[in-house]
Structures are given as structure tokens and as C-alpha cells.
Amino acid sequence: MIFDYIQTTAEQKDILDIARQICEKELLPQVPELDRTGTYPRDVAKKLFDAGLYALEVPEQYGGMGVSHETNFLLAETLGYYDAGFGFTFHAGSMGAECIFMGGTEAQKQFAANELLNGKTFAFCLTEPACGSDAASIATTATREGDAYVIKGNKCFISGAELADYFVVATTIDRSLKYKGITLFLVEKERGVQIAKHEEKMGIRLSPTNEVVFDDIRVPADHMIGAEGRGWGIVMRNMEVVRPTSMNFATGIAMRAVDEAVNYAKVRTQFGQPIIRLQGLNFLLAEMLERTMVSHGALMNIAHLLDHGMPLNGMGSATKIYASQTASWVASKAVEVLGGYGYMREYPVEKLMRDAKIFEIFEGTNQIQQVVLGAMLSK
Image (cartoon, rainbow, N blue to C red; front, side, top):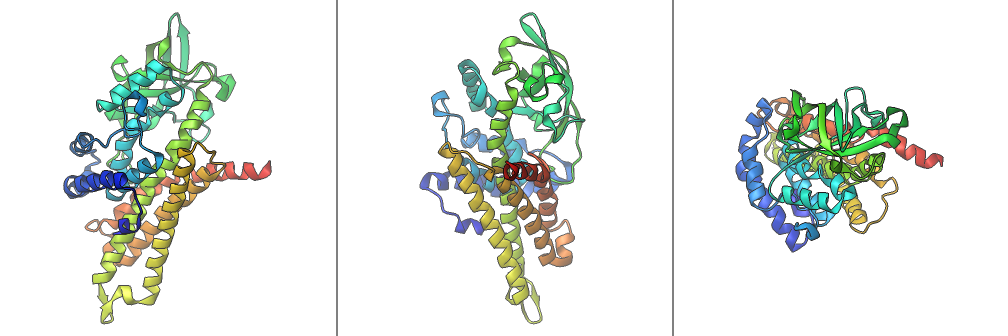
């Protein structure tokens, strides 16, 4: 397995071994049917939670393990290897609370930590039907009424919404202010949040994606995260962590694609020999491994920068582009290595190709990342 090439500490190895054992035994046998039906395996998520692998990033001062970004990245990569949709959603349940740890009050941080450590999940609600890449143009409003705010608007493509207990919602107090009006709120599902349309997606089908409706939802003023108009800064800081974390699931897809292609090439015989001995195909497999390992290394560098509080200076955008493109390219090449069999649902590589595509689109499209990099060059 490609994991044999990954260097880890003893603590990291223990965490990853537990995750692999659970995924091998409990998740993999279910994946074909779960992919067909578009179902999230709550039973597997419960086993990972019981094993202590949920919300590992909760800071120690609030009762969590406070693991490094490097460890969190490695776990995401491992879960992505077995199923990126499941892994992304399992991880997203705690990543949704990152905005609270970055900009909330001490009371809010302790509350979020306690809820996460008890298995509760937080969904981050930013994207809207008429607002994708131009995230500062959100239309969901928060109107002050006495000691509360009334939230009204629709969010779309929200990962894990139907599983969430809480929602971190990006609103605007004044649309004319653009990003200077963006304000975040913590909203409990029980306040009347409506989970609407369940999206039927091409890939990552184990990850439920929904429209979420906030129809005059009243929340106390102390549910605001940060201050009025300060939400955009928190969102940007949050994305600097969430974006590269998510790309580890893409690298997990690439790793799985390499393993599937290599394993097939070792047993598939043509012209009197295993096809892995055919130089043209052998070189292709080598390039698949090469690109995958570069993605892994780039993401570990991002983890190092985050763990040491150092600015990414465009590395986040560049790595997002490379890791997502690599996952799509490697998965596509794995289908080609398997030939006609690769195109059949009996084999897992066609699913890997479907799963990989979304990583070029969400968490800020690759084109938007190029805009960011281009702007750096223009200064």
C-alpha cells in the first residue's frame, strides 16, 4: 500500500491504524451500496467517535486532544483513501465549529468543545443559490430586534446539513456593505432550521448535501460569533485551515487510485506478462505515484506552516489547485489502466474518478485560487 511510504510518529501511527481497521472492516464492504443510495453510514461514524477519532483538533484547554494540523491532515488523508465523501462529512462535523474557536467568546468556545466531545456536529453555512465564488455578496440577512437577531435566507450545497445539530451561519447586516457587513451566528437546529432539498450528486455520494432554509429564525444576540461586520475575517481565517484540510481527502483518493491500478497491473496479463512490466504503463504508474506523493508533501508543508503559526502566502491556494488536479488526473488514469473494467461499477476506480472532481470545485474553485495567486503577482 502507498501508506508504506508515509512517515509518521508513533502517536500518529496509532491513530491511523485504528482508523484503517475500522474503515477496512466496517466501511469498505458497505461503500458500493452506500454510493448507489447516497447514504451516510452513521454506524461507521459512531465507531470512529467511540474510538476517540472525532474532533481531535479541539484545543486541550477546552478538554480536547488538540492534535497538530499534521496529525489531522494524515487522518483526513486516511479517511479519504477509504471514502472521501464519508471522510469529508465526518471531519466537517467538527470543522464547522472552527469559526467559533477562531472568533467566539470563551463561553462559546467551551460550549462548542463540550458539544463536539459529546459527538454533536456543526455545519458551516456560507454558499447561497446566487452567491458562490463571490461569497461576500450573501443575501441571508440578520436583523436586530431588541436583544435578538432574526435570520432570514437560504443556503445551498451545505455538507452534512441533515446530520447537524448546530449551524454556523454567515449573514449580512447590510448588503451594501459587502464583506464589511458579514456577521456570523451560531444557530441551533431546534430553533426551526429547515433542511430542504437533498442534492443528488455525481460523486462523494456518502456525503449528504442539502439546501438549508432560515425562515425568520430568532436567535439571542449572544449567539453572534465575533462582532457585527467582523464575520468575513473569521471566514477567511477558517478557510485557510479548512481548504487544505479538505484537500487531504483528495490526496487520499489519489493514493487509493494508485494502489488499485498497481494491484490490477500486477495480476492482469497481456502479451505473456503482467502489464506492470510493460514500460509505457510502468512509467504511467510511476507518474501517478510521483504526483500523489508531491501532493502529500505539499499538504504536509501546509500543516507545518499552520502548526507553527506561519503565513501561507499563497501556498494554500497553490496546493489546493495541485492536490485537486492530481486527484482527478490520477483517478482518471487508474480507470485507463484497468481499461474496460475500470469503467464498470464492479471496480472502485470509476467511483474514485467521480469523487475526485468536486475537489476542483468546492472550497474555492481552482479558478478563484488562480485569481488569488495572480493578485499576489500584480502587487
